[in-house]
Amino acid sequence: MSLSGIGDLRQHLLSTQDNTRLKTELNTLVEELTTGEKSDLTSHLGLSQVGLNSLDRQLKMLGKYEQVNEQTSQILSTMQTVLEHVDDQRSNASNTLLTISDSSTPLELSRGSDAARASFEATVQSLNTRYGDQSLFGGADVEGTPLATADLMLSELQTAIAGLTTATDVSIAVDAWFDDVGGGFETIGYQGDSTGVVERPLDANQFISIDARADDEAIKDTLKALVKGVLANDPSISLDLAENRNLQQESAVGLLNAAENMADLQARVGFIEGRVEEASVRNSAEQTSYGIARSEMISADPFETATRLEAVQLQLETQYTLTARLSRLSLTEYLR
Image (tube, rainbow, N blue to C red; front, side, top):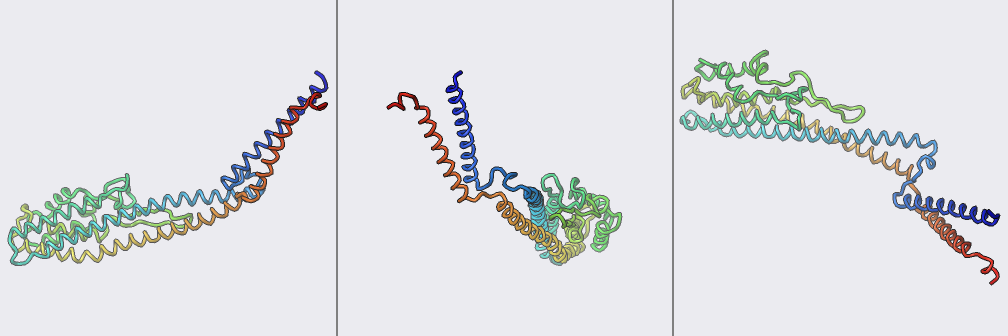
């Protein structure tokens, strides 16, 4: 091959390399101008790459806490909905039973008992509500069902009061079934965990404890009062008309008295909701702060990038022009 041929080949290779380099740089600058971020962070940051990695870890961790807090908030909201429904059932039954008086007819007593039964069944069903595959009112036992069925509990209570003939005796027996250590409610009625609570993280340093359970005193007081209203007209014990009225009236008073404790229970859950909301706001503020810091570290100055882009474009255009002119060079063109 002649020296002239070798020179032309070398010139072509150099020109191709320059074109490739300029195109690559052009694409990089276009990407940086579009995204607003440096494409080569290692070269851009140098030793500051460690700081960027730390920010990324913080943002990832805060993102996980954000997801946990969102789920916790939904769980607590569902619990509040359940407690509101339980309180509505308490109020509805109370309003019906409060109409019972010494002159109430057997039909009115039957209606009162039916209202108590409907509210009792609805209350038990509500307290067994699940969030996904997790029970809400069983304490640390999130897999099981907190309460036995309404029918099972009523059946057990009917056995407990069999043979009793006065409202007072029935009331004492029902209270014992619900309140005594080792009693019916503890061994049969409530099937959840009796000591534990559900703990969930708010952030790296704080946890909340969700302690609202179906064996809470507010819940038990409501269930007890409803059961008395149901059993007052139960044919298996056959209370006379006066004792039936007395027990339904006691049921109404018990439901009224349970209102305060139910409100306290809802307030406890509401307080936890507030803590979760505060943590979410705090985490969101931290995410914004870290996000701004990260953006400042990796951002590409738009004016500088645009200036460099224009310069590279000019270089590339010049390269194309020179290449075109060189490709047309010949002795004939020179002599002209």
